[in-house]
Every structure is written in structure tokens, then in C-alpha cells.
Length: 394
Image (cartoon, rainbow, N blue to C red):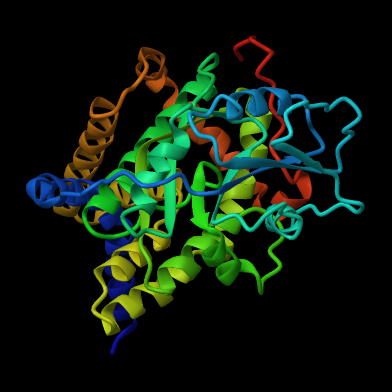
């Protein structure tokens, strides 16, 4: 075995490992379209379940009154709201509705899951289900009823849609475009071809027993608890349903420094947890589980901008080494761009998002800056600070 042979093998393997990410979404979309008539979920009326709505806040409470107001407008009667105000001044938080419970940890928790279990340990009653909402979210009135449709079908984990609350800057609109792409392919399509929707950090719900089984024995710090949770759920043989009508309105990043800090944490999270994909893919093969196999492949996928830039590197290098492969890469990019546009066209996409697409190179540039900061990502901030009131476009 010569050194040249080894180098050629590594180069070919690298190109395949990156290149399949360009065409996988479109391939899944084809399966989704072909099997559309076979997807029939029978919904039925059921009594209201008892929900615990856990709202986590870290340092900031300015948006808490808004999220509570939206939660109290839910078209549902059987729930309690638990606000976990970690390292927050709660002197200005006052709610007359007895369904709102304010919890102020004595010591700083600095962890989403610690906040969740702080609330679980102080539940006023044994709630059957829990749903996790961020302090910057607003909730559609039909949110819980939309979740119920999938719980009533036997699913124990459900991910809703995080729609954009603000599209007032270029970065917010592009962040919204990214979310639409992931909700469409990693949510709607992935679930409907027989696998599981990926979790998005909020707008998700679980049976309380499953949540405790999955994370009760772990102490997760930094970003990425949702990555651990989805791995634990799918490893246990469950599917995560996608409820496209369970909508929460999420605050999008509106400033460049905010974008860099947030993406640095997210990229750090991928590097910490992408190896989960190897285990799940292997389980899927040995257990003949399409759910675990496909979900494992999705977990191995790098963040969008990373595989797009690596693919561009392969394309440019092949212009010198192998023009035919450069043509294949070019076709792969056309397939990806077509798939990306399909996700926008088949979703309820705001015109501001289409107008923002010219800024994608700028958006990618700031994510490259995030990549350079990935080692110190979790030291920068535990939570994203939002500036929705600031309308200035950078």
C-alpha cells in the first residue's frame, strides 16, 4: 500500500463525507413526496392532559411578562407555569394568576437542565407532561392542543415550530431562513419519512417520566442539553414527533456580536456531541432501525456553513485535480440550493426573508468568526442577550 494510495483514499473519503450532506435533504424530500399518501395519522379527541410549562430565564427577566401573558392566553385549562429565574432580580415580577409559580434558585445554576429539574422537584402536582419554553418566546394559543395530537397517538416526545418573532434586521431575517430550512428538513421531512425530528431547545414537550429517565442521571453544563436529550430518546427506541402547528415565536439574533456569541456556543456544542451520531447509526444498523440509523446520520452532519465551505474547497481544488469531479460538486451545490429554496417555498416564508438572502455571505463570515471563538464559547455567556427593542439595522 503506497502513500499515494492512502492519500487518494483519504481524499475520496473526505469528499464523500462532506458531499453527501449537499444531496441528503433533497433525497429525503423525494422520499417524503413519494410516500405522502401512506402517511395517515388518526387523531382523536381526548381529555386535556396536565402540563407543566417550564420557562427558564438567566440574568434577564425583561421579557418574562410577555411570555407569561401569551401562555395565559392558551386555549387550554390544565396547566401550571413554572418560571425558573436563575441569577435574576425578581423584585419586579408579580403575577396575580395562581397558575404562575415563580422560582428563584438560592444559588446560581447556570444550566438549562438544572433549571428544569429545579422546577420538576418543586412541581405543585404530578404533571403528566412538561414543555420547555424560553424566556424570549411567545406562544400560539393552540400550542398545547397541537402537542396533544401527537401525544394522543402514543408519542412521548414532540417538537414544535420556532417561528420568527422579529425580522427587523438582516441577521434576524437570515436566522429566520436558517430556522425554516432546519424545521422543514430536520423536522417535518425527517419525521414523516419515519425518523425523528431534531430538538430545538424550546417549543418541545415530553412525558415527565421520559424526561426524567433521559436526563435525571446527568448533570449537563453549557449549551447543548437538547443534543443529549434527543440522543437519549432515540437510543431508547422512541421517535420524536414534529408538530407543525405547535408554534412558539422565537427571538432571532439581531446584532453581529450577538450572532457570533450564540453561534460559537452552538458550534462548540456540535463538536462536543456529534460523535453521538456514530453510536446511533451503528445501533440503527444492528437493530435494523431506520429511525436510529437516519437520525445518527443527521447528528454527524456539520453546521450548515462548515460543510458548505468545505464543499467549496473541494470544488475549487478539483478544478485543478479532477475537472469532472468539480462538475459533480457544482451539480451537488445546485441540488442543495434547489432544496434550500424548496424549504422556503413550501413554508410560510415572510417576504423579508427572501429579501435578506443576498446577505448569506456576510452571515457565513460572522459564523466563521464564531468558529474561531469556539474554544471559549461557553465562557462568553450562558444565554443569548436579546435586543428586540433596538430597531437599528446593522
